[in-house]
Length: 124
Image (cartoon, rainbow, N blue to C red; front, top):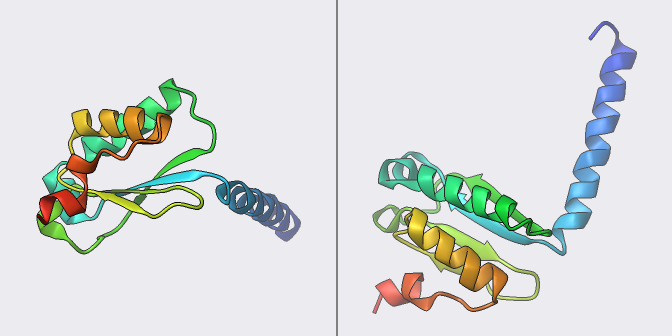
């Protein structure tokens, strides 16, 4: 970067990309993996990797996988939240890579919540 004009061009380019992402996200299913220290210590990294790879492998358009900080229920980590447009958020707890793949195939692809992995199932 050699000038303020170049910096301004980069800023405008990124601003447009962020704006496009926000528009696309309105119709996207978001998968969020808790990746704070507690989540990572409980095994969130392989969960995140499995989900990202499976979404890419299946070429699932309008599905984003992102990480977040602490979700606030450390004893239930790793935690994955699925937010689909027009539907209630589903919180999966005590996840591992194998469970993550099942969530992708059943919930994301086929629209069936994997209830035995949800927070409601563990609280019973």
